[in-house]
Length: 202
Image 1 (spheres, rainbow, N blue to C red):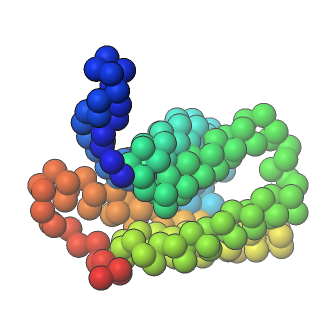
Image 2: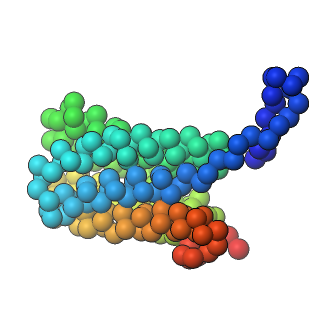
Image 3: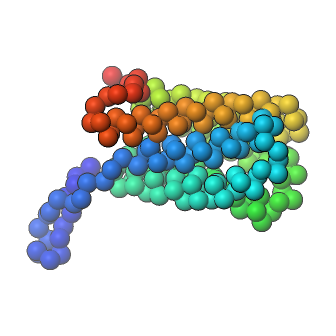
């Protein structure tokens, strides 16, 4: 993507735009933090009442911050990152709205199951695209696909044990997402490869 923009003050002569930092560590961090707490609830490490902690985080960090990360990825010309972070930012905002304003909908297991199925399908095809990124990102999408598939099955079957298993996989996914965020921050800050991300496209 070109870093040149036309300046109206000089008759449209192209000038260099300010560089945009990598927003992916922010996107992965926001996703990881929210999924981690949600995973603890489903894994029954935390009481279901702890959802009141998850909801603000889902709106602000998992939702708004991740949505912004997606917009910055569009700015950088990264279609994969833009679609992923914008979509999952919207997912967390949807989660907040659903639980905050339609709490009774949480008992509509079939409906929630179809909602999660929709996100499982989306994540599965993003998993295919992630094969052209790096190993750290690929592992996030692989485990996230499994997480959502297990949650979907648990909701359709209204099975607490399946949902508990999904919570455990969600915690693993969150840890991998945090690693992807950490690697992005550390490698960018040190300006060299400190933490491996295992390229898949070379």
